[in-house]
Every structure is written in C-alpha cells, then in structure tokens.
Image 1: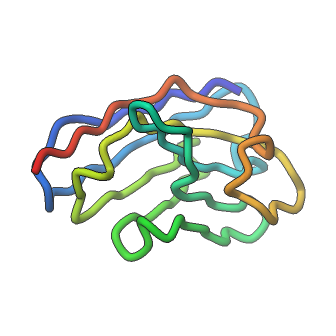
Image 2: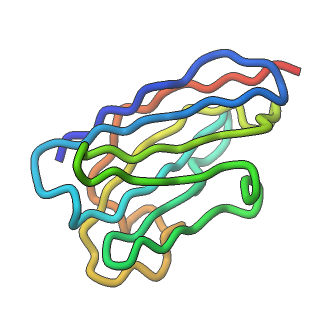
Length: 125
C-alpha cells in the first residue's frame, strides 16, 4: 500500500485545515486508517483512526471535538478535518493503514503496517 498525505500548511491559531491521505496498491475498503503526528523532539503520537469493519472512529483526547476523521472508499482517501487549531497541534502528520480484522487499540502504532511520508502542519499563535 502506498500512502500520500497532503494538505498541511501554515495557519494561525483558530483556523482550520483538512488533510487528505490517498491510498493505492490494494483494496482500500479493507484497511483501518489512522493519523498520527510527531512534533519536534517528541515521540510520534496517535491522533485519530477509523475502522474498516464498522466505521467506528477513535480520537486522542487532545483533539476530540476539534478534529474529524472520515473516509471515502470510492476515492480511496481518508480525510482529517482539523478545526480550531492550536499551536500545540504543530507537527508532521502521518497517514497510516493496517489490515487487522479487529482493531481494538488504534493508538498502537504496530497495528498499522503502512505509513505515508507526512505533511507539515504549523500553527502560529
């Protein structure tokens, strides 16, 4: 699976951005999809995920109520709508895909087999 993430940029606090991850190489509808992020000097952390079996969505506490993950199986894309951005959201955002039949721990990175190259999001105060 090849993953291409784009849509990052430089915005002011309070603004919105939408990230897109385009997948190719296998059946997209059978993939759990997720977004992780990594800020300078910090470990990569979970942001959001959507399960392929039932469409269940998961969010990190830090983004609940501000970010929304969705998928379009017809277009082989997963979106991350980010609203009310904060300087603390500044990171490189990575798209990830995995094929586990039962995804119970979306925050665990080893549950995802494929990773995109990342897109930079910078939020100024």
